[in-house]
Image 1 (tube, rainbow, N blue to C red):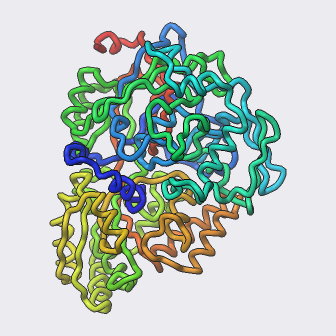
Image 2: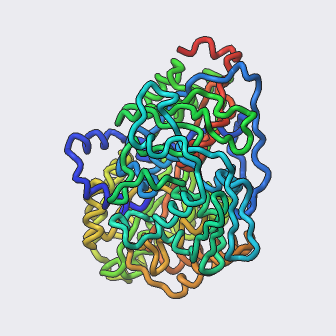
Image 3: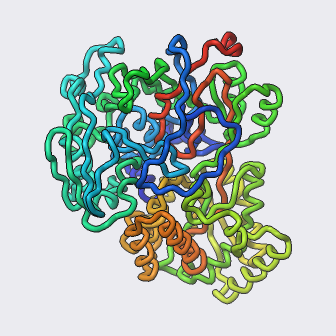
Length: 604
């Protein structure tokens, strides 16, 4: 996520010292543990993905389910869903774990069946939108989709929110409201709709009848289907939004998704229960969700996760920082389901370039070339990860291929090429006037600040620079960046799904997350062109062209490395597959617990 926007909101809330200290405990994995869902049959390796258009639904991953006798039980997972860091509002949060919770509770018109392949399928829509031309989308909703009624399942009285909307059928008016809410320039919460740039591509929304609407865009917009499936595309009821344009309360978390939000115990656990009235993606005969619910436990160190998993208090686990225990566990328990999965979060440096010395691209390029990414991979995750370009490597349909990236200066691995990069870095630094450098390191994840002395020495030795550094919290970074007082920040960031998400908001002159001061007419034209291109192969080519341009001519953001997470699950957890992005917990509707598996008997 973008710190400048997200953490500015956090800063304004003036968190107590107690909560700040609790937040600091996140440590190792930072704020992004890979989302774990029930989605596909077991797989042993992360499978390379082929190019697929994000506007066309391909054949979904085969759904596997066996005897109905195994319906029931509660999945127990590690995660950060209990760590609500900004707001519960599904259109205003930028915090990945909260988006994951929303994805189980709320529905969208469309959803991602397979993010890595770009496969989009209907969710609330009966079928993919009809597109008589490049700007028109005719959407027909499934009939009989109803908002949650938790009092019918949980031992509690109906809240005022449930009395207002519970059991009501979802209509085209709800869809229209959910999108126009994020387009409303008069909202007092306007600054918090950080994906408004997506909905601003809409020219009109016409409600044809209670279950049909027509959306027209201002111009051909290739990623528009993605916008309908993206992480702010949740459909909400107007009755749940207050006079200040907020729904930042748990009682308002009433959607139409497969699970209902039961309890939120901050920094302990978040629990969700099965929605018995869920529409089941048009297949009610399957009786999904198969589990009674799931619980996400807030565990933030390797020892706690390992102990809970070994005793089956968790059904699935991954390393927080050090993967060695996972590797050992796989040896001890060869029947475990094991998956190595990249995640969309990564480590980067960001510059403000409308003031010296970072307005000189020679200096930015010198830092880019001097930064030893291989050293970072080892320091952060014991080598389990890959080099990161301007688009996250997990998105193989959009990211520069690793083999191409590793040929670029700054990413090259051989000793000879590394020496060439370091020599060029020193030459550029001296040509830029050899300014003193001050690096601000984020305090979380812990390995970021722990790497600070090593990075300081690296820049001093390669560039011959005088380097100083400091460790700041994200709120401090955000506040200082807003004043232009944090021109060189080394931090952790979360990723996105579509090519447009990675590029347009951050590098277009008018991009809502362009905080660097960048304005490049050539780049603007390229970014606008990829939005107009519907052919996936040509759009991929344009994406590669943009990324090469950023690396060769811009470098307002220097991308370093991203981790590979090592996952294990007990073999009774069926339809398990980790996902490289937050916001896919709805897929746990497919998960089930195989109580006939021999390992199940020792589960407490």
